[in-house]
Image (cartoon, rainbow over all chains, first blue to last red; front, side):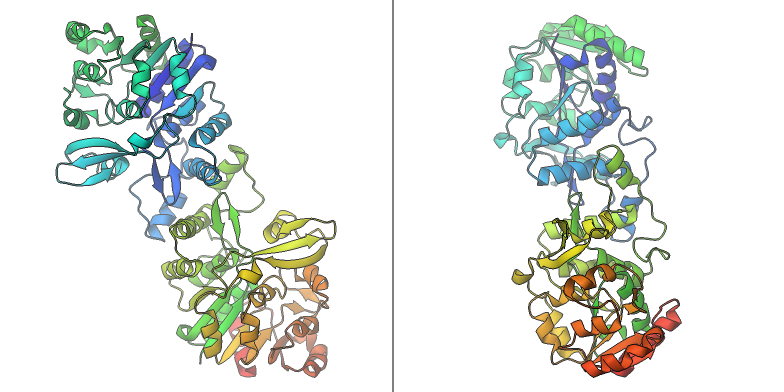
Length: 307
Length: 307
């Protein structure tokens, strides 16, 4: 069974640890959001690609869910204290090696997909990891106080405090899906939407021209990232109102109404099942709080079962 | 008194710790070799500029004489072990911050002199530090076994083992002295040749068109880097034969015969004094082994006295 997963960062990476136990990973393609990518100290940082790579490669910081285990920050401290460089974005030393490798290869003319494959290879990932696009795109947050911030600046730099007027993907209209993205979707028996942010993770992937329309004929099943009207992690609650969606499992499903075939919600949201089913998708209700790899694998099997 | 010093790395930096005690540092301009610069992991590394900066800024590794004190190598270890990147050139974590700052600024369009001034400012250097050129140049070593190696590759990567056929500065003919270099030499009351490698440090600076001829009318006094027929540090003994020079204090002085006005040699080489003086320059004999800052300051005062 060919499986494609659309993925953001921490939540998606956690979900994928269960998915690779539920499917043959060699038939899995993960398409990750790159709208959060940023240049920092001249380096190309791809937070979601790295979070997935470190998590599935066994090197992630276990409590944080992002960054490296046993991490230090000697370089970042020096950059800040000696050279007065900005320090709002955490940059660990081990993590930095990945950014150096990526940046060097990009500067040498490699595409982001090529570099991503090379890094994934170094980590022994058993599936294909693709960036949504090789083109430069950038999630921008327009705040209600009139500022236009890069996503990481708003989220990490300002802790998602400024109220959001609008979210958009700069460069989207000129971007193309990375090589392999559309083919993987076409050949997929099921496309899984990981429990990721519907606006700046899944929504961003969908903003790359060609991807959303490729999902229309596909079998698409997703996991709600909203449980009991609250985000499990991240800041989707700050962004959903800006796209006119309710902050609950039904509101998110509605954003995907044109292509969604199945929607997995948490036991806590069982009462929303009927309302969601009335919108079209089949609904499954289960434990979606991925505290253990067993729960996570079980969740993945529920998703596949719904497909 | 306006003083200009032409400088390589470790030996020059050590000498400068004495020179700044012997002159008003605000009237001192140090012009450093950049032929050893290299790109590593996509970053622009300037070993001699950094050695001078760290040494005079109080951050150098005291035993090594290069690199940072209290240094770690987390990033380099990760680059080598995780990503199979070359590890022949030591790259410490604190040191890496400097390379990141330099590379980011160069990529943003700053010149090497601008960045060097910014980095020197961050370290509080009390003198002007200039790269010899802002243009890309590269010291190359042609070995007798027919290989064409970058300098650091030969020196650090192969421990200077391969015998040297020829040394040349790639890009020299198209390079120009960095802004401020020729003016500083013109306005100098004395130009000091630090006890640096006569081939790949001082020789490289002299290979930038315009610098050697600017020295002709100047008062130039140097310190021999060769004591008792042996290098104090580095590998000049491996390079002097390739330029047809004897490995002794007289052989080095002869390389500078067209512009050298004074030459300071070690007590161990007192017997060479007459031979050198016969070539033209005035000679002073003193302790040139810079074991303490007092000896080093005394050496600097001898140099200035000779001028």
